[in-house]
Length: 169
Image (cartoon, rainbow, N blue to C red; front, top):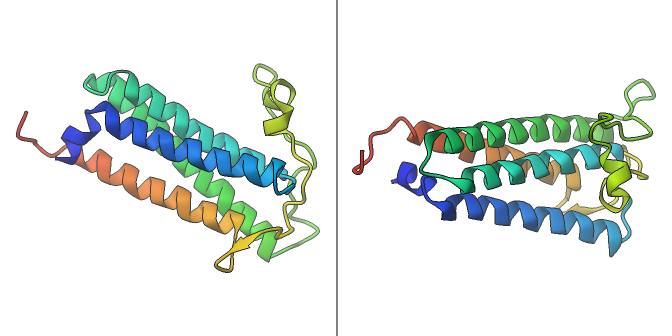
């Protein structure tokens, strides 16, 4: 059943909707609540966007195994990278050290200078080690650990379902 669901466009569009929601929240925090994003926040934002791109890839032709597996691989990569970044960010916040700090400026490849193309979304000016917002006693990077880990769990379940024979096979 889950395999059949992953072969439908709705599943991929739901994933994209969640990513759009999380990105909208990030922009709300930045531009309405005036919470300056740090370098790690920006990198986590890019990882979240990678999952959004994965959702778009999967939504193009979800019945096509190549499109579906490319979308799944991209989703897994984005979720894993995002989880690693969020865990590192949590470490900066709760184990501050003068020897372990995030960069002062975001660094993107020369072929994709996102901070120059869209500075309103990709320019960092916050402090990685500062806890500037909490919800249920969890900081933003801690929530991102939950979100990215949840994505990895969902990704794993969907990948496993690809190997289960469905009624339509």
